Length: 159
Image (cartoon, rainbow, N blue to C red; front, top):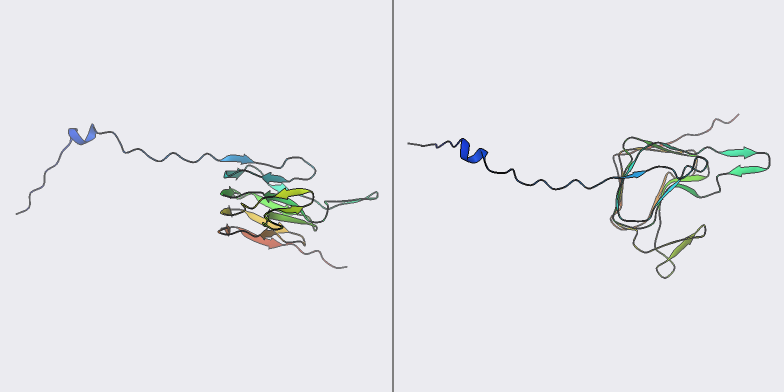
């Protein structure tokens, strides 16, 4: 014989178990209208709030962006970037995402910016990363990953 006991009011009066607090998502957007770039330098969770679109500029003796420019540079570790289905579209001479590699006795210098040795545990997810020619993603660091992104290259037609 099985006996079941049901309790109604005593269990209902108990407080619900505490839920873990959601990690705040810091907004991530381009720094300026022309370059459409951003740099992440501190650990945390970042969420894109808009597309990053960088056009190839030329004419009148000017061209840009400079070779090797990055739309999204990550200088540090323990970073999660959620693109939230936004697009990083780079011009022919730019990288979409650049995770700095540690080199040169623990420091790497690129384009006048010094990068540290803690470029690890970086995740970039949930977006579209397009490149017109240069690398869409350059990553060097332990435990770093690209998750659930659509990667693409757009090639120009030859005339």
